[in-house]
Length: 126
Image (tube, rainbow, N blue to C red; front, side, top):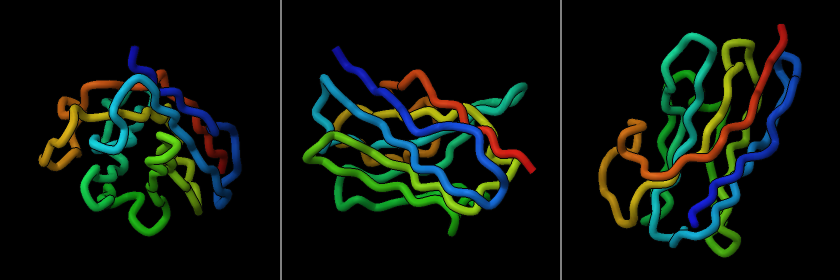
């Protein structure tokens, strides 16, 4: 049974930092691109960052480039999202997602992912 479990969310002030973690189980972690998405109230789920299974290449949406860092630990089946200089507009539920193995697509669309976590809330006050 595949499980993705996010943790690390919370309520912070603008300018603060948070690190989200996603623990994966029941799947071949090292062969999958992993992504982070977020969904704010009344809005569609949007891409935040992804890290490739091959070579660990990373890609970010423009609004978080330079502030967020995605990383992975294949030995522990963990993926992280370090979020610095948080802004109120970063407030959302953050979701971890896993692709099927060995995909070579952009990894920036929800439909490209096979498995999802339950989400963790991040709230940033002004």
